[in-house]
Image (cartoon, rainbow, N blue to C red; front, top):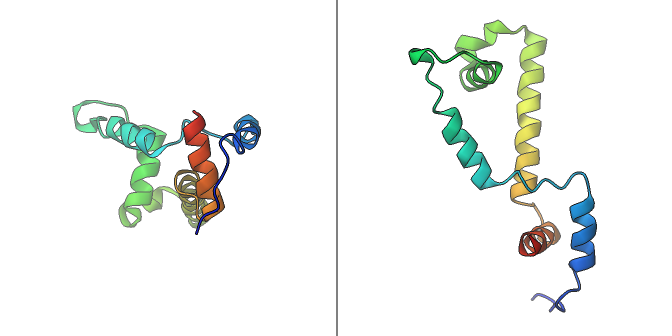
Amino acid sequence: MTAPTKPGVLLPLVETLKACPACNERLTTKVLFETWASFRQISLEHGDTVTPAVLVGVILYDPEIFAPLLNGVEQAQLAALGKTALERYQQITNPPHKLGKTLAAALKEKT
């Protein structure tokens, strides 16, 4: 059972949260899909430059082959950074608890 909310009750909180430097409206599932589609357009076999992003991606995707480019400590740091980034992305795009989901919905409604 959910408690009814009065229209506008969350607006001051929404404004406060929007002012928070941790609020990142640019990081959405849609933006992830668009960026991934753009990333997939890189064509190394047709002369596109190998970038750090490409190497990091293949190191994380296929560590058996590409991990030797880094030492053990560097591999562990890269894997930990990837895990941290994934956890933060998931928290932003799909808050883990009801209050977070309610606040996220209020923020989306306001924008």
